[in-house]
Image (cartoon, rainbow, N blue to C red; front, side, top):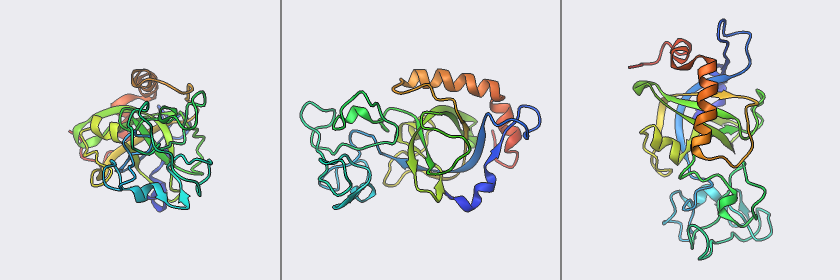
Length: 229
């Protein structure tokens, strides 16, 4: 994950000049792995979850778990036998399906099955939760489509879901996976189509936006210093 002091790497793209089109912005960073929203993200025993419980907060200040009173100081809710992962905590994402109850894990975007990216709070650049993006692994010339589903730390950039890491062949464990560099993120501000969506729908919207922007050839032009195959 890159510190935002390197935000000069974030640019606006233009199909012709790279100066007059704000339909997308892009950056190169590593990839940290986000488990939030995953049904198996966090467990009360601090060991069985996909991620360390400390990344969800601590007693009195839970920032990634649903609590009984809806406040960080509340007690985390544990999934019941009728939920996807009984015994695990209910983990949250910033993007949610408001038609489902707050205690239902399916209200949130499941990091285990949906490709999503994380952007810093107050990034600006016209971004809104639900915007689409394409994430490229330059050393493989491989790419997949994702949705902006979670807000991360204000000072860092370069985080994505377990599912997206898996799709790109990047080690996907939130505890010890990820990669340090060489990942390109292209985000299309104002492109959101509401939530929920299936991964196939995300792929469909993302593919249309990426093709209009210029596709992989345009990405290579924007990042000529990276090692492409």
